[in-house]
Length: 330
Ligand code: AKB
Image 1: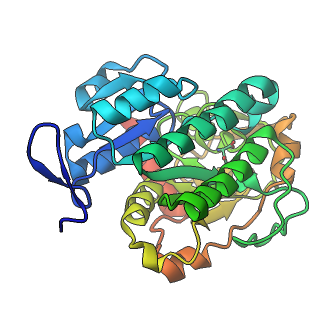
Image 2: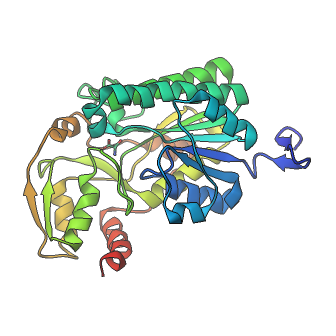
Image 3: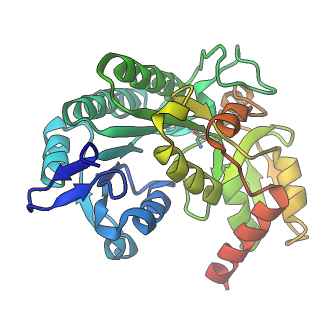
């Protein structure tokens, strides 16, 4: 339709709904390469621009367009949005929970000032804006088993505080300026790509340890239950969520998830593949963070409003992790 078409600087008309141009910030983290892949499959390789302040690997550079972008530099963000005719912004830049506690000023800069820049750019250029939130946006005063979408949020990490801020600011910009803001609260994400400094990271490291040293030093207690999901469920859900007509969204910030387990339960499942696996429990400062987070995530609104459906449970998640990691260690 004329409504969703844009005249490109190259002189042709571009259908924004079926072929949006997408910028991903912080795209070299745990989620970026996967999200870029799934958006590229759907919308075309060159319509998805990955960006980061870090240097990209050979495989990222070969996969499609990649640019330097610092979310603290408003000018560079604006320049990219104008020059590349960006329609959607997927804002992944953030310091995670554990690393944020170790560097609060930097976490405030990236997670809060960076967010402000991104919101302003989305407003100026009328971009559809996606920002992930997290189970870490809840705290010790929230109901933990299960944790619904709408409840008390008083997180005690700078990561959590900055994510509640992002949820509220995004929703405010939607009300005030009409930007199409969308947010999913992810649980711990299990993938073969390593994350950078979270509280749920043990659940990835244990797979690598099982395939190498067969000993895992766990920084959480054996009975610490946390919500988790396999990355493929996250990628499919995020891609679908971006396309849901606005009229079907009763909210802008949804919980999603799939499973919940403890280190002990995960180790038990992994021993079906590696019976010799030994887990040594040495809880550290991350235990207190985990103890303040949801144990079970209630994602029934996502199911009801836009048909969210996870496919992986604990056994199938372990199976697919071993399938994809095994060749790397052979
Ligand atoms: C973290 O542990 O900080 C992240 C998260 C659950 O948001 N993985």
